[in-house]
Length: 75
Image (tube, rainbow, N blue to C red; front, side, top):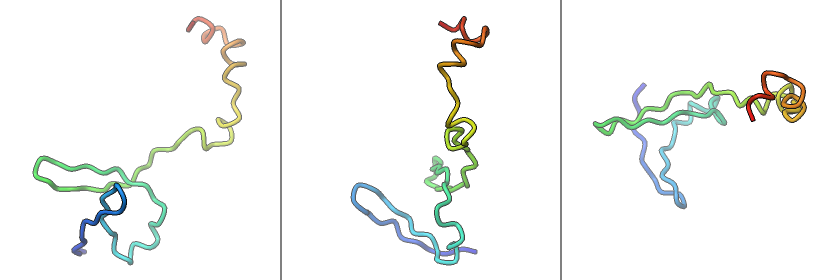
Protein backbone atom coordinates (compact mmCIF):
# COMPACT_ATOMS: atom_id res chain seq x y z
CA UNK A 1 0.00 0.00 0.00
CA UNK A 2 1.57 3.27 -1.13
CA UNK A 3 0.03 6.58 -0.15
CA UNK A 4 1.33 10.11 -0.36
CA UNK A 5 1.43 12.19 2.83
CA UNK A 6 2.53 15.77 3.35
CA UNK A 7 5.16 16.96 5.83
CA UNK A 8 3.62 19.72 7.96
CA UNK A 9 4.80 22.03 10.71
CA UNK A 10 2.89 21.87 13.99
CA UNK A 11 4.33 24.20 16.60
CA UNK A 12 8.04 23.34 16.83
CA UNK A 13 7.52 19.87 15.33
CA UNK A 14 7.36 18.47 11.83
CA UNK A 15 4.52 16.00 11.30
CA UNK A 16 3.97 13.28 8.71
CA UNK A 17 0.32 12.30 8.78
CA UNK A 18 -0.66 8.63 8.78
CA UNK A 19 -3.45 7.26 6.58
CA UNK A 20 -6.76 6.87 8.43
CA UNK A 21 -6.79 3.12 7.80
CA UNK A 22 -4.00 2.87 10.40
CA UNK A 23 -6.52 3.82 13.10
CA UNK A 24 -5.79 0.63 15.06
CA UNK A 25 -2.21 1.89 15.57
CA UNK A 26 -3.20 5.03 17.54
CA UNK A 27 -0.90 5.39 20.54
CA UNK A 28 1.75 2.97 19.20
CA UNK A 29 5.33 4.26 19.36
CA UNK A 30 7.77 4.10 16.46
CA UNK A 31 11.51 4.36 15.97
CA UNK A 32 12.25 6.86 13.19
CA UNK A 33 15.31 6.67 10.97
CA UNK A 34 16.43 8.80 8.02
CA UNK A 35 19.12 7.27 5.81
CA UNK A 36 21.72 9.10 3.68
CA UNK A 37 19.33 9.14 0.69
CA UNK A 38 16.61 10.88 2.74
CA UNK A 39 14.46 7.75 3.06
CA UNK A 40 12.46 7.90 6.30
CA UNK A 41 11.49 4.63 7.94
CA UNK A 42 9.15 4.08 10.86
CA UNK A 43 9.55 0.84 12.80
CA UNK A 44 7.27 -0.19 15.69
CA UNK A 45 9.11 0.23 18.97
CA UNK A 46 8.96 -2.84 21.17
CA UNK A 47 10.96 -1.23 23.97
CA UNK A 48 9.33 -1.82 27.31
CA UNK A 49 9.88 0.60 30.15
CA UNK A 50 10.51 -1.59 33.20
CA UNK A 51 9.22 1.16 35.47
CA UNK A 52 5.73 0.81 33.98
CA UNK A 53 5.66 -2.79 35.28
CA UNK A 54 4.19 -2.84 38.82
CA UNK A 55 6.82 -5.38 39.95
CA UNK A 56 9.65 -2.95 39.12
CA UNK A 57 7.78 0.30 39.81
CA UNK A 58 7.47 -0.65 43.49
CA UNK A 59 10.95 -2.21 43.76
CA UNK A 60 12.95 -0.87 46.71
CA UNK A 61 16.35 -0.13 45.18
CA UNK A 62 17.78 1.31 48.39
CA UNK A 63 16.88 -1.86 50.29
CA UNK A 64 18.49 -4.00 47.59
CA UNK A 65 21.67 -1.92 47.79
CA UNK A 66 21.80 -2.43 51.57
CA UNK A 67 20.97 -6.13 51.64
CA UNK A 68 22.46 -7.65 48.48
CA UNK A 69 26.20 -8.37 49.00
CA UNK A 70 26.91 -8.13 45.28
CA UNK A 71 25.37 -4.67 45.08
CA UNK A 72 27.05 -3.31 48.20
CA UNK A 73 30.44 -3.41 46.46
CA UNK A 74 29.31 -1.01 43.76
CA UNK A 75 30.05 2.03 45.93
